[in-house]
Amino acid sequence: MNPHSAPRPAGRKESPDRRLARAVQRCTGTVLGPYQSAVVRIGFAATWLFFLLREFPHRHELYGPEGPWGWHMARQLIADNHSFTVLMWTDSVLWFEVVYAVAVLSSALLLVGWRTRATSALFMVGVLSLQNRSVFMGDGGDNVIHLMAIYLVLTRCGHVWSLDARRRARRPAGAGADPVGPALWAVLGLGLVAVLLFRDRSGEPWIVVLLWLLWLAQGAWWLVCRIAPGQPRVLLDVLANLLHNATLAVIMAEVCLIYATAGWYKIQGSRWQDGTALYYPLKLDYFSPWPALSGLLAGASLVVMAISYGTVIVQVAFPFTLFNRRVKNVLLAAMMLEHAGIALLLGLPFFSLAMITADAVFLPTAFLLWLEGRVRRAGRRLRPGRAAGAAEQGPAPDVPAPRTLVG
Image (tube, rainbow, N blue to C red; front, side):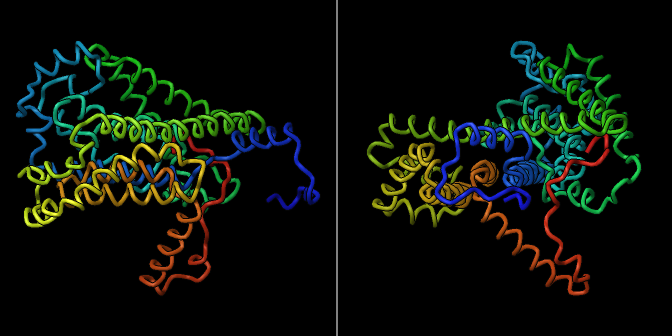
């Protein structure tokens, strides 16, 4: 509540025009779901980072020159489907190592929220380049990461729980220009020139156009903040908020579409109809990291039937429960537990982590704030010598970003 606004008289209904004006002001003047978008950023960056690190010894077989899907075969496929990947510029092993290293580094930087506007773009390039190089190496989790990597570029996902937020909170008012931002912007500009030179080998042209638009937008943002920090800056903030809020709505719709599609397809399957669908993957050696546990669960026919039917019910019903907070939270917890069970029983940790992260966009803000408080208290216990004032410092205020070019 705004302390400067007059309270509305009790029992007096607000007019539709005023409600509409408040809704428009909220959508244009604030970043909606800052904690949810931060969870999405941290979750997908961590999922991709852990996957790249785990597969580091096998990277050449998965996405490199030693894989079964050879470089020339990939060239033919990309020439047909126009998928974006910088790995088609050359078949050099050194170039592959550079791209893989940039993918790892950008994931780590996005995870901690360092210059999120730049690192989210590098994260997207790394995800698309590796996945589109060997499209048959992925699964459902990779598809979700693929989509979310594009969406994250359009969000203000570093507003809280990031090094960017800490830098904004600690940066004194009226501080001079940040030298890191322009330097990073110039380096990325050189990279885009290279993309332009190899555009015939990069695949999908709209990704290249998106990268150029992002680069030009950051340059315009910096220029406006330096020359006209008044109303033009406010206009840029409004546009950025609108883009963030619209993208967050798209992410939510995407998650609902995933579950609705999966649920309705399951209804049409005979194994899901008779309640035995879970039994069969439990009997596959490839999906049995714990054979004894899988065998024990497969032998409990009533449990198998309950989980099979429950999975279908939860996935079909979830999109219809979004307007009932309590029911939505119950189904949300059930889906997260379901994916945790998939990680444990079927040995698909990265698929499960990607889906849990996608589900987290619907987590209540009160729960995330409670979780933040618990983490802060745990951090103070680990660092007892920290100053009391710094220990009690809250999250970064919802203020416009400083005059930085990239970040």
